[in-house]
Image (cartoon, rainbow, N blue to C red; front, side, top):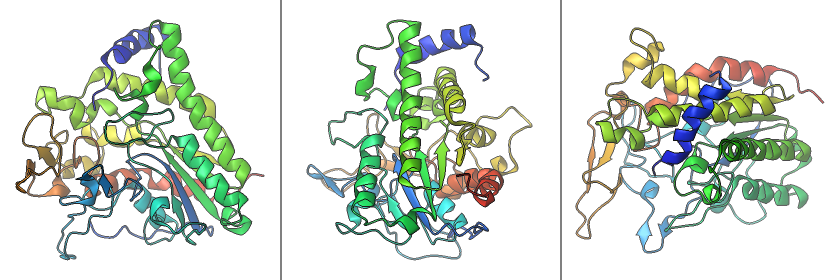
Length: 367
């Protein structure tokens, strides 16, 4: 999906006026506190199976090869697509490892009614936003709808108070509200004031859901800030994957400014700085960037790319022919497809975020 050009043309001027300040199984690091459950909300950055296998008459791409096709010298089993939008693990899996869990908790849609795994549950759905996002293929629950599903399980005692008191929540909102499929853009962006209201509303929705989770008893809440969406291959393909889209990244900076203002100092809440972690790998100045940035080649180019304009990774013809090209070594690419990082990409990002995250998890809960 493409970014709304009008939105970010206005954002560029708005920033000038407002002076925005701008390989294998994950290693087990385990927090010193006993965080035994994790509840995951948001979108495709952390969805591990909530989008149905079949939508209409087509198999959802994250349920078929080459998704889940990770290989390395230590593991050579058959590809196992798991509904994740990557070639193997993703952000929530690495965070789960830090809590001492084997992987991200089971998907809500793959869990029996009125039950919850001891490791928690993933409510995130690919394509979701804080507002309704339209798609010709499916309709997805908003962040608030996901939190309401969680609330029902709490109210029905499916999720116990004890489990809540040993739980961490993750909210991953990754930019679908700023894409062309968002219904929320209707009637907005006619003035700078409208733009300010819209971005503020996105951040306010995130804040409201953080507050709801805390009221329900979740002890610690992690919130992603917005990654540099102008660096996604969907935005860099027009220049042959050579440079990030400036307007898109400015838009992410505006979003992050509001997020910091609203929840940056809130007790028991930690903002995961995806913007900096991604930028230090894929969009840093020459001679700068993180050590891990050297591990990746053609950093803005996806590993899995459609062989024709308008197609998608994993697409096949009616005869079964692959309509995509796959890179030889996904561990050398940061992006897996037009939007999502590879397993190696997520590993590098979470390595950069690990220390402040662990320090936050090890802090005592503030009543």
